[in-house]
Length: 292
Image (cartoon, rainbow, N blue to C red; front, top):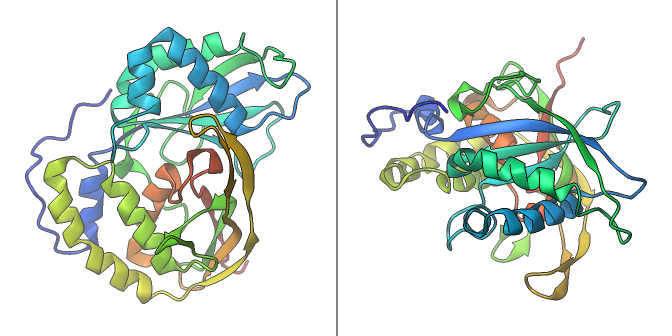
């Protein structure tokens, strides 16, 4: 694991170029899990469920730390489908954040145990064919290990026209109500809030001071949402009830790109921006719209 960034003194934000100094505080370890699956309609919540059950048996303390952190602390992991690709074999992305990176050996042991728990009503076993590290570009980088979010880069020229494609449901709320037509401002607010949850206490005040600059930059960039409702009905074991989670899917068109918001948004592409762990947390991908 990389050493902590030296000198955690409060940062005096002079502009959005300081965002990367905050991102350097956040450790991330993304990997692609190569799976062998039975003839079952496998979902991310299903895999999360058996992994969590196995982790509970392997190490209850680590289970509580990763799956049930204290109030106000975000879970240190994400599971998500592989976007924009059709792997020859089944695969998912598994991402660890912060202190969860230090629990890697235990968390991997839980995955190995989970394969015998089985999937679907028949509890058919599955297999893990391998683990591949993902680098700051999102591409496989075998043996890389953990890295810090300031190394991530926006995939195209930040001022180039692009669209952000939301393959998993985006669930952003305002005053308790779903935002049905999110804008770049809504996305910037959600990303700013999401990153705050990963920063140490001493960075909270200077990070709050950046909010006005981030929102002003977002308001200066035109955006247009083209989307549709994307909802999920599921049973919650923790709440012992059926839940209906409402979200939206689609694309956010950005004819003038993201500009200085690029560091914030590339971090959000790894950390995600929406609500609902099993809902995908608003996983998006940038696609270039520059004419050929």
